[in-house]
Image 1: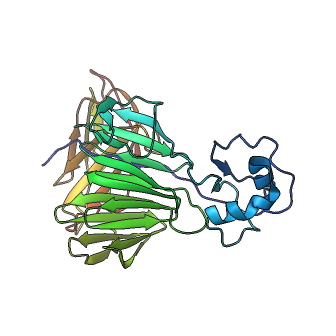
Image 2: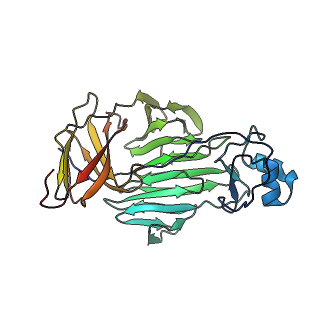
Image 3: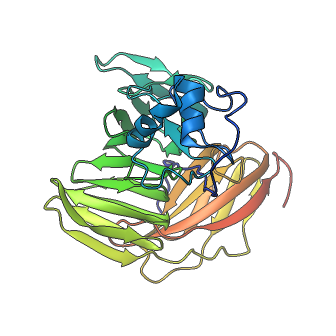
Length: 341
């Protein structure tokens, strides 16, 4: 049995739709932030342009900034950029262990929950550490231990780029009309989306992705390599070759689990095609507040030093390509020292 505490993940939103002729937003600064507006039912581009820019005729500018193909029907909860140089705000939702922000000169400062980061900064997690981040449009990113990413905003295209420099990252991206606006850049290629839930992990000589909702587009050296859709995984090697496979099903948890004295013992039923299994524990069902992750080669887990309490647990299997499969979700209650199941 191989044990390890590493990893992490998460968050996201879907959209609803309608629009046209309604009064302008009563308070354009809420719930929006400077530089962008979150669409509410009844909003129109000309009302938004008048409220924020002081001229309804500036609606075309808003249309072009957001690459809107249908400016007459705005989707509620969509983020509309109002300024070409709008900043990228990144909020720290939750962290566990040692996590740092690093500037372009290599200077580090410890991260704390509630802090805000900007584009150009790197986020670095130490051993046994996790951090959950929220972008200004509601997209959520979770970074596991021993990982490193850098956020870059391409202002002209309105694209947020996450450069995965080490380890892994999981994203739930808020959909937005128009072109792909969120990308994960790896050493071997770029994975771009409009809005979806997916994972990316750096691998020896390549990178893998697992798509849990939506689809991603993969490119190498500027050339499209194909799309990986919901329920599929992909491995991109250093030469740009994409291997696409179906995700392994969620593993079955055996009923003999037990949790007491700060230790969780759990086993999963062996799954054909799996070479490894991953277990993650969180205080919330959205897996923002991750506290532990363990990896096992044989499906047996012993996770130690877990405070007593209720936890959401998810289990997944990893195939020979290094692609993580679908998730099984459970709720466990761990009792304190001296208690029994």
